[in-house]
Length: 348
Image (cartoon, rainbow, N blue to C red):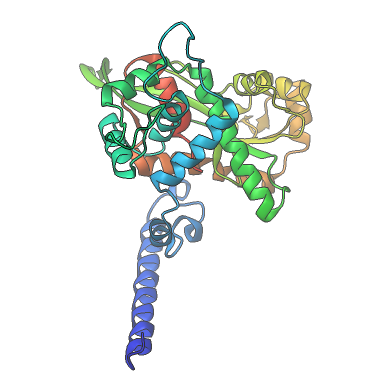
């Protein structure tokens, strides 16, 4: 840094980087203009933010150690998924530590083998009573898999809600609480490893089966607060998500939910209105006129196109999931798929 040529070289390097990024942005915009209007990026500036990926990588915001620390905070609030039986000898591995490890797994495209390797690299001792004279207690792949089998699915969903609330608290301390009650609802399909028979182009062929996912995301923090999934999930049903959130003792009164026209169904409006949930859903039309319905008419009277434009942010958790693991789920059992999908959509 004390050399006479350091500052000119630094300025030249910054200039070259800015020029290359500017050229890339221009070329990207020209390519996007060749696409149909509906398939163009909703915001070229935000979808191709300069230096975003580089800064995110260097900041190590997605480090395994930080994710594990946040998972431990959640487990401290939730408590262990079960209590050890006093009739048997104490378990070799600590239940809270193992639960934190399993919750961390799905934020990264990790297999159980890769998860074990990261624990070993971090020297994270999972034993109940660590002994300095012995090697670090790292569970095997089969032990990690067995432990995940034992954790009930509702525990994963409650952990997801707490992660969302922790992110909301952090956001509120920094930027205020004005936008924290605004949510988006959306659905997607996740590809599974299992194959199924299907009639494709008049021929019987094999294709990858899919799991349907319906979720509510807090827009300003990009965190999933409620999720429901199955191979036959109704992607138009907002009621199930709100009902699950209500059963978890969360207050629904202050929520504002924004959804696309797939959710323009009378039973969604009725269920939301009965719980004082504000909804902004783009109306479907038939012959140029919106569909009828008492609760639909009340909601559409307050429809705001400006508010609806913020719905696009709900797709960010899906985009993060796509970039991490290709939007795939590698479990075969339905209960394991549900557990894997609950934390997988999260973007702290």
